[in-house]
Image 1 (cartoon, rainbow, N blue to C red):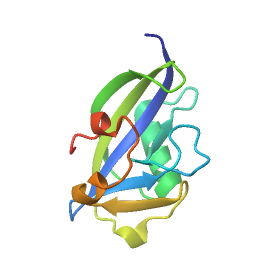
Image 2 (image 1 turned 45 degrees about the vertical axis):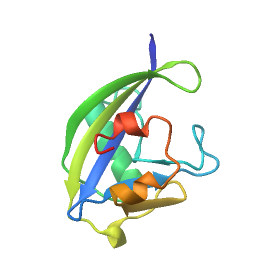
Image 3 (image 1 turned 180 degrees about the vertical axis):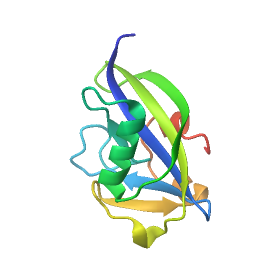
Image 4 (image 1 turned 90 degrees about the horizontal axis):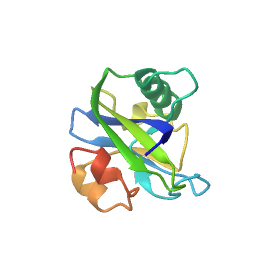
Amino acid sequence: MEIVHEVAIIVLTNRAGRVLMQHRGHDAHVEPGRWTPPGGGLEPGEDALAAAHRELLEETGLTAVLVPDRVVEQVGADGAGVRFHVFAGSTDACQEDVILGEGLAMLFLTPEEIATKELVSNAHTLMSLM
C-alpha cells in the first residue's frame, strides 16, 4: 500500500480520566458529524510530533506533553493509503480551558460517554482505551 496521506492524532486525557473528543463539522471532508480525537494532516516538511502539537493548539487552544503511542496504516475513504501517527498525552486542563478551533464541539468525555457517540470508523483502532 502506498502511503499518500499522513495524519497526527492526539488522545489527550485529563486528570478525571476524560478523553478530549471532537464532534466533526457537517462540512468535514471525511466522516462529517462523527466524533474523533483531535488531529489532522501533516504539512509538507513537518514531522508527526510537530503536527500533533500544531493540531492540538489550533483545534483546542491547548498544549501538552505528547508521546508516540502507535502508528496505524489503513486504506482511507478515498482508497489511498493513510498513516496515522497516534500520540498520547495528559493534561490538567478542564473543559473551560478548551477553545473550539474546529468542528461542532470539543469535549472531555468519559469512556462511557464516548461509547454512546457515533465515532469515526477507525476510532477503536486509534484509541487504546476502547
